[in-house]
Amino acid sequence: MILEKAVLNPNMSVKAKAIYTFQSENKEEISIQENEELVIFDENSVDGWLQGVNSRGEKGLFPASYVEILRQRSNSNLTDSSVSPAGSLGNDSPHLPSTPITPTSFLPQQGYYDDDDDDWDDWDDSSTVVEDDDPSHRRSGGGGGGGGGPNGHAHHIPNSNNPNVHYRAKPRMERQDSISSSRKGSMVGRNLNRFSSFVRSGVEAFVLGDVPMMAKIAESYTIEIGPKGPQWKESPQPFSCSVEDPTKQTKFKGIKTYISYRVTPSHTDGAVYRRYKHFDWLYNRLLHKFTVISVPHLPEKQATGRFEEDFIDKRKRRLVLWMNHMTSHPVLSQYEGFEHFLMCADDKQWKLGKRRAEKDEMVGAHFMLTFQIPNEHQDLQDVEERVDSFKTFTKKMDDSVMQLTHGASEMVRRHLGEFRKEFHRLGGAFQALSQAFMLEPPHSSEPLNNAISHTGRTYENLGEMFAEQPKFDLFLMLDKLSLYQGLLANFPDIIHLQKGAFAKVKESQKMSDEGKMEQDEADGIRKRCRTVGFALQAEMTHFHQRREVDFKDMMQAYLKEQIAFHQRVVQQLERTLRMYDNL
Image (cartoon, rainbow, N blue to C red; front, side, top):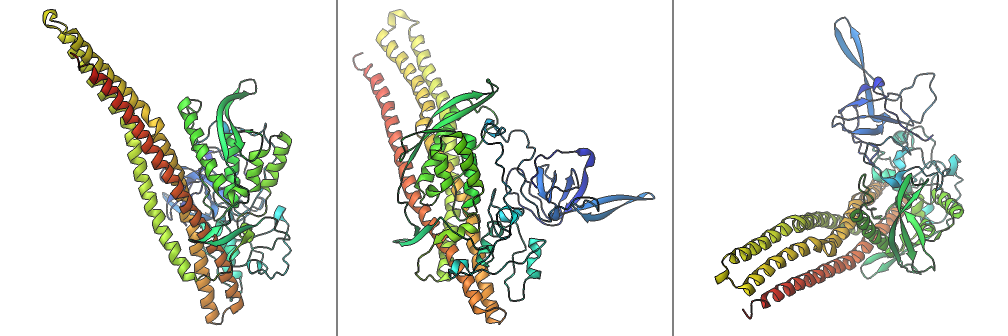
């Protein structure tokens, strides 16, 4: 069951205490800390989620199983608190799952959404797909892990000789976090934190061999050994795509207004028109499917001023960068949903393709089955050291990108404010001096006065030039830095996938050495860990390749614009200087 709308009712509020720490994954949820006092708006959970407010005043959703209700009862003049599990509905209440799912709609705080988040009745009003009943299988909006097959039907698990699909039947269970106690003693236990990225992504289920076998795997992504290590095989048909011509349009006789963009792939003859919400839909499909790939973040939303020229221009620039990253990625660029986004111009076909993408089974853990990995042996210890080195690198790069972002933003502020003001002040002072010289006509030199007055106007013009310059260089630099801030922000979770896989390999080998597990089973876990390792290393290689190209282009563009700008400044000053030559 999907939570369609959450309505807060303060008359039903109760106090509660968090018994576990929960980290929010999207703007509908809030983070809670162990032992934190909470206020719950309605103690009856919906699909395992409660709505409430934490001690910091943040409102949103959190898992019912992570909190305890504090009940008040009076006894004479004393008041005691009794504790009961949250989300209990009583004997007459319908059964709800013991693990929550992500609600598709929650009453947002003002300012979250813009014009692109209206209802979808004009696009596809009947394509909502129930994807998974366990939040431990999602990563920022999705990610299939273990459990049943599509539409709730059980999977048939045939035998397979492929080391990536050598799986055991998964026991039926009421709660994911209690599975370790229900598995046989020889099985590797599952992580207790079912909200970690390792679990939510489905990679844990894949590594342990608990992903149901697919009858047919239609898509395949190849990892090969390159000069600098594992890398994604290049797309057989590379292409680019432009995002142009943002245009304000209306519907419902002008009641609703939105911006559309002309999207033109280089390998087709026609353009399609997309709104921001179409980009947002594609972005969420990408997050749902591509477990071990750093999907670039979309440009941020804005609650007000979304039709102002500066905001439209900024969003367009950043959508161009987003699209460039998508088309340059050997895996993302081949995604069927991306192809549908780029090419489909027919409304009916769009809806069919949209639903097909939302019902894609090769997501999350199943996505790991699509990899074709090299036969070359890699020592897992070497891989772990390489991943650790990349983790250190990304942390340092993230800090440096943040530092450069702050510096560039401060420079923009000064260009638009201080520099412009100071040049205008200096120009005004020169013109005041010229006017003073005119007050004594017998001793006044008109050419000198004119030259000084012109100098004042020159400096005022320079102030305007400084105010205009950021749109030609600093804005573009900030756009690129914003893209990389998003990419870097993804890597801690992706690296955690490999760390979790390493831990399972070590645990299984220990159990095998102690005679608690068959060596064949431990070897299977190790092989599947190799798949995760190759995929992460291929993504690391792609990141470095794009980083070198992008930052070279960014620095060259910035320096060229700076040189051109200062040449224009010099030309202005030289013309002004020549006015004094023949006085």
